[in-house]
Amino acid sequence: MTALATHALTRRYGDRLAVDRLSLAVPRGGVVGLVGPNGSGKSTLLRMLLGLVAPTSGEAQVLGQDIADPSRYAARVGALVESPAFIPVLSARANLLSLARLRGLQASRVSEVLEVVGLTGREREPVRRFSLGMKQRLGIAAALLPDPELLVLDEPTNGLDPAGIVEIRALLRRLGAQGRTVLVSSHLLSEIEAACDSLLVLRFGRLVYTGTTAELLARGQVRIDLRPEHDGDEGALAAALRRAGYDVERGTTGLHVLEADEDRAAELNRTAAAAGFTLRSLVTSRDSLEDVFLEMTGRDDGELALARAERPAPGAAPVPAARSAR
Image 1: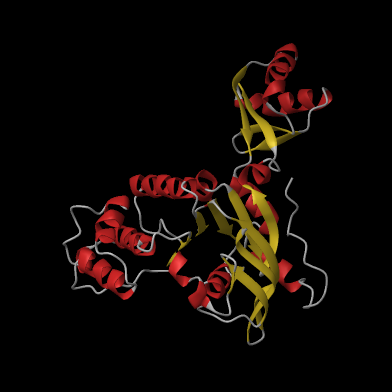
Image 2 (image 1 turned 90 degrees about the horizontal axis):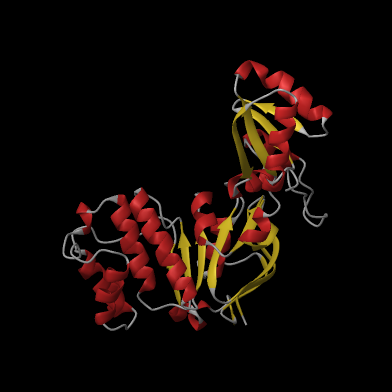
């Protein structure tokens, strides 16, 4: 059974098409990343799935129940969407106790979730004293109160310091390993790469990729970056490597040998030495998730604006990605 499924799901705001005939299926269990440029429809999709916004057309199910009646699945879902809202003069514990009573949950659950998010010892302080990062932790704690099967988190690491980000990443992976489905929307692609088992990539309200994180990363370009002992030899070394059949680009940090993996590193070193050059560095690298994502969706506002202008009218064939992922 799927945790989430949509069929031709569409949402319009006047003339703006926020989600465009979106069809997807997310299996249960694991951590799923929801990514896309600003305006790609991520927040609108989350709101429709949570019953906060009604679709213009199409269908969707959450935990096997139609989103037309969110009451049938709301008790099994926890969510943190945008900035969490709490009563500033009340303590973290008092805020969570209020939410637990509203949902008919045991008070003991409050202590459990405070410990999970690392707020034990600070739970009796008024929320007005909390930093943005601490409020995010408290928001995650509130989302965990019902011990949900599906946890929806929008920018869960917003405002956290590096140590806090690592802790939340580990928490997400633990929750996913327990059999929950954790849907995470974030602009921090490095964190998505580290925490998520699979990805949904949206662009202009349409799905441009669904699958595992590893499969998407495998589309990235592999290259070998190298630098000669003397910077002034870069041009001559590049020419020698091209004559040997390598695809070479010059960059600000040295030479890049494209479509070359680590198995060819020793061969490259020998080729450079045979041509009379000593290398001071030779490193194999692969495109990050951010690199692959930008190739799929557009690298800057100019590319996105051009792609948006070329976008076909509703009912036409889906728009291709701004650049094809390698």
